[in-house]
Length: 460
Ligand code: UDP
Image (cartoon, rainbow, N blue to C red; front, side, top):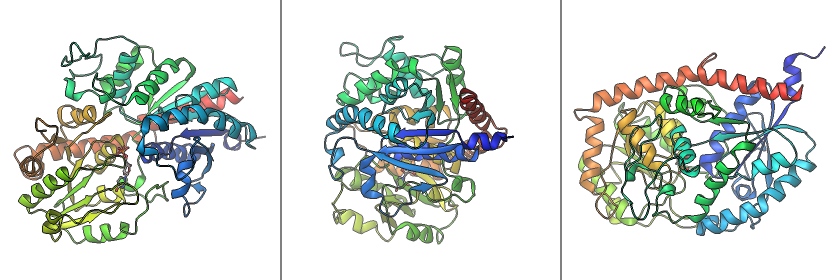
């Protein structure tokens, strides 16, 4: 007789994502969880990851890897023209993914994809494999896009560019708190058409799994489920290192030999003393922004760990203003962020508010200084300040930049200002709620079990 565990091991799930760090991290984590629940998991991503993969295993945390071509040579600079890249991927991705699936020795029972490859739903429908989507931004964003792309509410237009928006389960959003892709000022045509395709294809998606948890976005999750969507929060999908547990290697697109230096350096700093600064993997700061952050940090006299990323094949210019503060902290081009955010020396996180960074900060219990730039980040920043109360927002100047004084003011406000105690208390409460959601029998854990049971039942 076959045990249910053996039965599950014969069930193969295919995960599909484009190879951006912020997309790979949550779907790989979901894959590892599904392996722990007894499924066999393969992760297929675009070939551009290959050039960064020379030393990474093709088997991470029990998840197998496959690559398919996005239609461009491996060394092509995809960030140079995102519209061209996304168009090429939409043209060649479906054909190449289909070929991979058809020639694969395993027969897949379910395909789970991230939102920015919405054509995966067409591939899955064509070969009659049930399809799930892992929504990798907040559920709040799902609601905003769902209402926008289905024409259910009014949003800012050229003739009414400054209108505020009130949607079910959400607070009022002012125009500077909405995702950049729904604004008339959006210049990224391809992201708009991809999101349009996501919501056009939703009838082909059987389950939507959200990288969030009930306590974090309760009202909007309830509202989505009451409104006819089947939306299951299964997060936060972050490495267990943030919860003080061991976790094997991730799928890192950027390598650094500075990793161990950061942790060694942090270990020499006082508890909750360090300002950690990172703007994620896609943004490059302007010289003016770097200068203003440096001058703000200088006024605080606090130690800092600052990840400054520069475009491929370039080096960080030797700015005089960085030289002036270099004794006060550590500047690196990459760091093991989840180890940093779980380190007791870190007191706050000046962040661009990418969703993975925020979830990692939530699970690390670290207060945030929000400095959002584009896409979901302005909306995520509102959650940080107005909904969860775990941080403050940097006020922008009229030209969209920010001053050194404002950086210094925000650092002091979260580290020692009047609100700092409440902010820290809220951050610790959210951290506890995140851990609870993931525990055996927690709400996110239960949702994953329900999902696994449904996938298993579709095979029997
Ligand atoms: N990250 C990291 N080290 C760094 C900078 C970023 O490990 O020095 C990771 C971070 O932990 C997060 C991901 O890269 O998981 C960035 O995703 P996020 O959604 O925050 O931002 P994006 O890069 O997509 O804008």
